[in-house]
Amino acid sequence: MPGYVLALDQGTTSSRALVFDDRAEVVGAAQHPFRQHFPQPGWVEHDANEIWDTQLLAAREAMQAAGVRASDLAAIGIANQRETALIWDRATGEPIAPAIVWQSRQTASICEDWRARGLEELVRARTGLVIDAYFSASKVRWLLDRVPGAEERAHRGELAFGTIDTWLMFRLTGGEAHVTDETNASRTMLYDIEARRWSPELLEAFGIPEALLPAVQPSASEFGVTRADILGAPVSIRGVAGDQQAALFGQGCVAPGDSKNTYGTGCFLLTTTGAEPSRSGNGLLTTAAASGGDAAYALEGSVFVAGAAVQWLRDGLGLVASAEETEAVARSVPDAGGVYLVPAFTGLGAPHWDEGARGALIGLTRGSERAHIVRATLEAIAYQSRDLVTCIEADLGRPLGALRVDGGACRNEFLMQFQADILGVPVHRPRNLEVTALGAAGLAGVASGLWPDAAQFAEVASRDLDVIEPRMANDEREERVGGWLEAVERVRSRGAS
Image 1 (cartoon, rainbow, N blue to C red):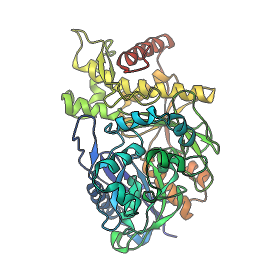
Image 2: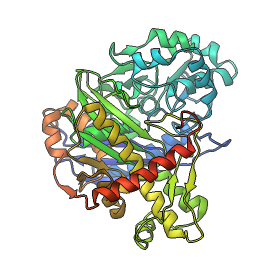
Image 3: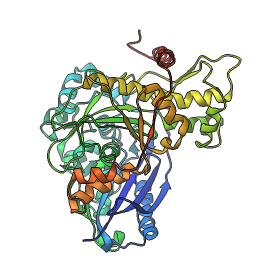
Image 4: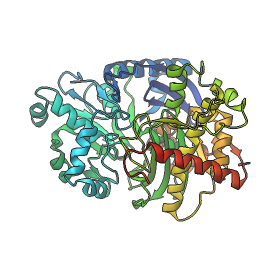
């Protein structure tokens, strides 16, 4: 059997590709950024063709770096930015409009209308989600409403909707595959996570024709075969998951209660709950977890702005030249000097779900300096993650013993220590932080027989951890958290106490 897996890790700001061997080690990698488009305040869009071009280039370069050919690959795995939605012409493969990114708030008015129609409870019951512009359904409705003729063409079956995984598979297979996996389907606000099918009730309520939608399969299964000229020979696509569920699998979190937090453009905390969906009483979402056939579920909390706040420091304010610089700057002061940043630049995610909230710097004095603002930005990432952990613990009815972490910001030692301190529990960081791509590779490898099953893969994935222990005293932790919660309440647009 070929002993390598190619993982395509298509993210919000770049397209990456990594080749893993049968020991789950990276043997080749490549990455290419692509442009972000902001046509109006709060809107975020992508050029889907640019995503395809950068992803294909990264895949070919990663294989070249690894010294492997298509015939050496057991399979391809795909992890993708979730909820980002696009519609394209089935015949030509051309998008009818730019892709609307998960961060974009341009469809907030559609969500307001759906809430006013009393659809919130139906959405939660069927999908485990709340009505929010974050998810794909309102983006689909927006495209059907705004692009001339789109509604009629969708009903005639001439158009195809997809999240980014579906788009990549359509292109990889030369238009043969119009398919997605359960984890991505579960983020559209159209998928019945218990019946494991598109919800007829929601499709009717939102006016979205089922002819537009892809087929849905388990995350570890046969999705299609690439066209021979794409990589040099046909290769099976056998693993697909939204990036956060891929990271959950890549961290080896397959037992109920296992939890991980990914620090990227946003922060996403997922806890495996098992074969039955667990409904949150604390503002978290119920979502599908990656599996090879049987149903699997997780609880999820989403922070919209995490690493994006550091990008704002760099690109918007010019306070740092690079993200790496923030660690030294934050350490140059003993604390944030009473300054809190609430980075609600696109509203607040879990557990608040406040689309109208906006960011604020609170606690500034004449003595506030650049370092205090930089430190407050890093601390905000940890505080927001702490809020999610508090909700997870309340839903589980017990404290977390530890939090597994991944994502680029995990390299920041200050942030990781502050995260452990503000949680009061150890943080477990893998030596190999490529867990999103590893999860995609693992799903494809399990489906291909490269690893016998998910449990065996989990053993491989969860080795070599750094353990970061908390050091902060309880009274200091409580004081700092109290200041943070007060700052959050001051930016709320509704439901503030």
